[in-house]
Image (cartoon, rainbow over all chains, first blue to last red):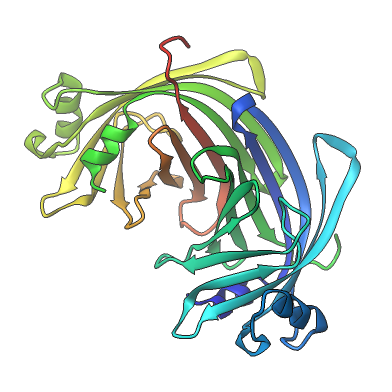
Length: 178
Length: 178
């Protein structure tokens, strides 16, 4: 599987169940959310701006997309968490199964990020992103075209300790309503 | 990594945090438990009996082990779940990274089971077990020698639908106390 196929499979609306394990405290957090993933044009102004901020030629972009989410955590049921971000794959010219992924705004930080991805032989997308004070590692794989799983680890910046591990089950929503 | 190395890494006491997602109902279940994994001898009477029940020559056994657990679910905090089982790898003679795994008693059924395992290039142990009315798929991988993760899927017996997805974070316990 290459990045174009992976993004294509990911497009649509997903209903997500996420469990986070805060390992030091053996604490659980539960989040349910709706995630929308839409293709955007390579010449979208936000894509061009993101490329410029990383000194990357916009013509190397393949399959950029927008991800938005709206969810509820059991930590604070009153508060709805919502947001959106632009994600821009920059594959290796010779090998679309690996490359960089630019992100307008990360999960762990509020600044733009750039991660390195590869897609393993069994079709698992693996993304590693180094932030100032943490490293994030994400694995996403499809069990069927309508069901995907995601394991995310937040590690200390030396990459050795894992602070939080989370697991999401994402089911394609076949209706348009949230 | 081959099965001997994988079992070796797994030996010890683990403190586990498990989240189960019951997908149809978007229901969460949380379990904390202690898991003990101990090597046993290949000529242990339970190992020999398990081989016989599957018509497998006991001399093909490599690295059998015993797993015991004691845990609490948030579904019923009064009840402690405890149990133990014997697991017996039967690797392919030419390739220790794949083979069969005999289990005295499965998670999903109370009868003995036989699953097929392989260990992928990135060191993930993948086990598929067919039961009468369900198929179980389990992935286990180590992030460090003291931290492993496990994703378990319970599928319908045709292997297409996923009923339950669960995720465990398992941290090696460096003390002897529970």
